[in-house]
Length: 330
Image (cartoon, rainbow, N blue to C red):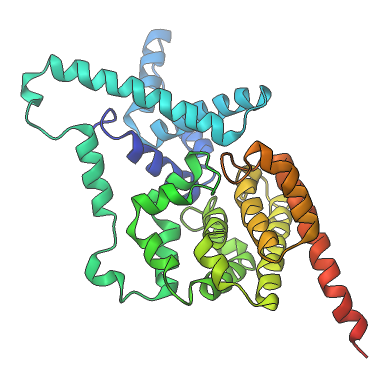
């Protein structure tokens, strides 16, 4: 499958590569710098370019650097990371589509062969859980599959009021199966809490950058919220999300380079907002009434500033919820 034919697959591969090795850009550049170079300036340039373009990892590194630069420019102009990323992918998609059309018009040998869209669809079909295994697979294994699938990048790359869940469930059959399980809420909570206390192992695993964001969006779905009706379980969900966020911030401060960045903070805030709404938090109700006119959680995703406000609101709610219990103790 050529680069022109599989833009979505490259996005998924890029996300998987970044998640599996957060220092891969540095490794690629170090490897190139250590390679022997010809004496002539022209030969040296060609040699560097040849080594760089022949390596798949180097190509992903170049794509990552380009995306980082574009995101930085967008942030300077007040745009969110998700918005910039969506605009970049849309622009590349249009460019590659035009290029494919031009190539096909000049290449009779391509006539009758699968189009790029058809190849992408076939690739995505191969990533689905086989129907005969879908119902028998355990809920915990299902969470792992949903969390690690390359198709989960659809939750991260496109801005959406629901955190990208509707896009992901259209692409991957494991999502709807998971959300239909009666033990999905408790399983998600247990695995989320366990991973939050085992960040070293998570950081070395696949898709480590996005695993918490994916679980948080799943935990904020209508199906999971309906399962979390007990007051103590609702508080556990909120407390676990706040604790996980704090643990990741602390973990980042102890690393040479941040592993769990702030780019997924809106996903964390989306889960907090849905949970605060389910517990009828008065402060949240007043806050959201002011935001509703702007379409928050309906027409647009949460911003970073609003995410920080929701984090503070959840901390205050939990503090008040725990105070009566502490006062009643002998």
